[in-house]
Image 1 (cartoon, rainbow, N blue to C red):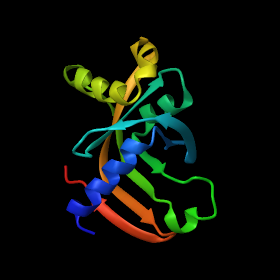
Image 2 (cartoon, rainbow, N blue to C red):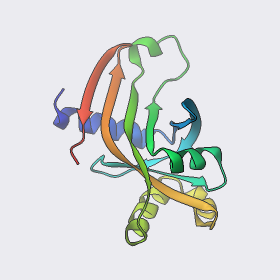
Image 3 (cartoon, rainbow, N blue to C red):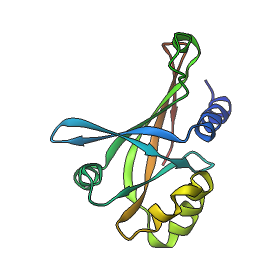
Length: 149
């Protein structure tokens, strides 16, 4: 599918979902975490926050390659035909100080109740520089959207 059709579908699903599953790696073993997230309008970045003293943050310091899964399932048998799941591949990175305010504003616009959490000095605000999206619908219809650097 063409990006002008796929981009709005990704954007709509991301706006509708508050959380997704972040996959990092620990000694060649996958490690997953349920995370609040936001995204930039151009779909180049996902934004999330985590405490620095966590396994996921330690994993990211050793290996920045991540996957992030966002879906709209309702835990119903109809999900096999109607649910959409989006796998995001990319590299997680600290947000440069001169860009932090803009990314923080996007994150808090979606998650205003997390203002205290992200304001803590123990919290890291991170972004995933997206390399591609895999959109899976109707159980096994897969569409790929590569993001050019």
